[in-house]
Image 1 (cartoon, rainbow, N blue to C red):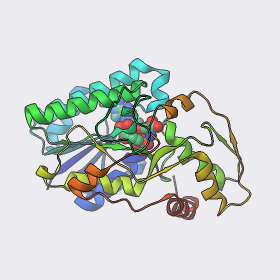
Image 2 (cartoon, rainbow, N blue to C red):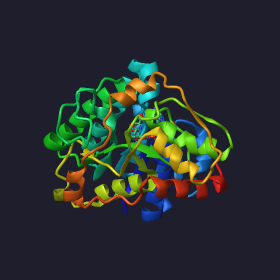
Image 3 (cartoon, rainbow, N blue to C red):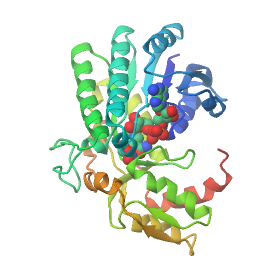
Length: 315
Ligand code: NAD
Ligand code: SER
């Protein structure tokens, strides 16, 4: 059985992906790690260790002592937070990825997963149905770090045979954790405000279209990619991935069908420029062709699921 290390496990993606990995492989095979001891309570179904991935000695020791064979490296500073401290975001996002790739080479790990993002695209990218291969030129530090990270992933695959796999996630929407500093996180927060009976102040314009994805689809895509036979994974930078695309006015309309007195106000801030630099929608035909990707959720199905389950969810 493969020991799996999840780095940054307590975040939006990690909280759900770590559970799915434990369900699949068994909790004793999965080691969830994150910065703070306070995250331990989330992981009563698998092992948990406090780990700052920038503490390379501690990370190397853990990989060796636990005989880790797969790493899911999820720790990163996201787009909006990254703009507040660009050099810190660059250091964490790049340095940690390079370290994980080096570890994978040194310990001959079986597989590495590292998420990229629609943030690799920039203002000169075709906006609609954005292809896998096109002009990128990201203009956020987060996007620059993801684009450089993709090049490093492909490099380690080609030069050192590191089996690293990656997806360019759209904005991820889940209800099991709170927003983590991303531009797309308005679409997480809006459900919390709607259920609390509060008016929602949206930091994007009502017509600001972005590619989005419900968390169960993101988890399915991740596991589908990680379980795909090696020779079917043709792209070693990162795959475009898509399920839905909507603007704030449409998620608002979708919620109104269930909560008719919900109110919204639009107050665009610095995150609007970030959203404007990203695609409206994504062409993910390579993922469909290479390893059979098919999403399950559209906007209304996601809204229904979140509004049904969030009120009973214990944080
Ligand atoms: P998040 O901010 O919710 O979680 C990141 C986790 O990493 C946090 O629990 C944080 O404590 C941890 N972390 C931060 N610094 C660390 C360090 N030095 N050592 C160990 N852990 C550290 O982010 P998320 O939304 O879960 O995103 C996870 C990954 O997916 C990131 O690489 C992100 O770029 C990528 N991604 C996310 C989205 C999205 O919409 N959420 C979209 C595209 C890509
Ligand atoms: N959803 C992320 C963000 O907004 C993009 O990866 O930062």
